[in-house]
Length: 351
Ligand code: F0G
Image (cartoon, rainbow, N blue to C red; front, top):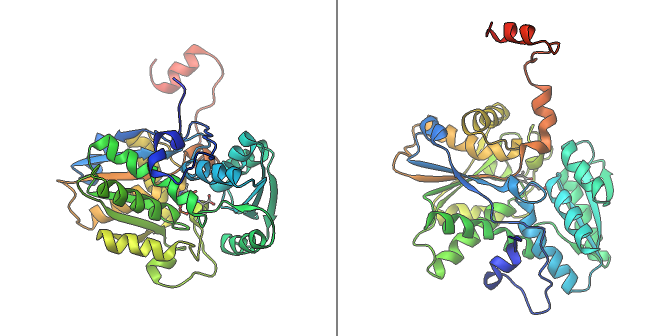
């Protein structure tokens, strides 16, 4: 079956017109997977993972990008531009290539995972590495987009949020109702904004009975919303969320407050441990930033929060293949042997 994609699946909920091209790279319709091994670990009644790494470019960005690019085409735009910690650029490069547009990508130099950079290079995007952090890069890109006839496809473009909210629809469609809690990493804060919009809209049209508490988590060294002030030099191993002045800050705070949720923070060690646990106990390999969801859940459950009668969803925002270099760098050495049966049996203790 040919996958129809986000624009076709949720057209009634999206700002489409008869002139919007129904493009798709097969985004959306990602798995929601229950993990009994991790339910035990966290004391959850039911624990599910939304595998957004299964999108065509390996992250949730494709849901919003397909809408942003389709609307850019509808408006006659030929060039799209974004600032990115990596995934937005990989996605915009791929969708621009698919649609015959030019993608201009600005990334903070030396601050993005090699897998993401490779994706943008492979798709033929125009790449500029800026000496500065993500916040400075985004600010420069916004100025460029105001001055020149290009479409900005960062999540400050409302079409991005519209597309990304479809993930919330899918969670409700899969479970039959909204979960009790949704754990999600927060960087530029577009995704938590989008999920909350989606949950609210689905409830308004009667497709969901309730709404989840939104549990956003930032990395300790890049936690402006938790601290209530911008972070000039954000630091975390999770480069995707190394952001000190999120564009959708106020909307994230609104999602937190309206839902009765929270925005907390986890340390780099907790993020790395959660990534390992998700892979070793759940078979789910997420990129570092995406493991923040589980890291937040583990932190709260260790603090004594009771999830035993709750249905919990953790959003895994990107695939672990994006920054697999970090896994390899920190791994234990593994066996290297000659192709000899006896030698292999001996080293495995099977002789
Ligand atoms: N997880 C991953 C894998 C991301 O790439 C991002 C953001 C987030 C979480 C946070 O989402 O920004 O909507 O709060 N990546 C952006 C980028 C900033 O440029 O790719 P957010």
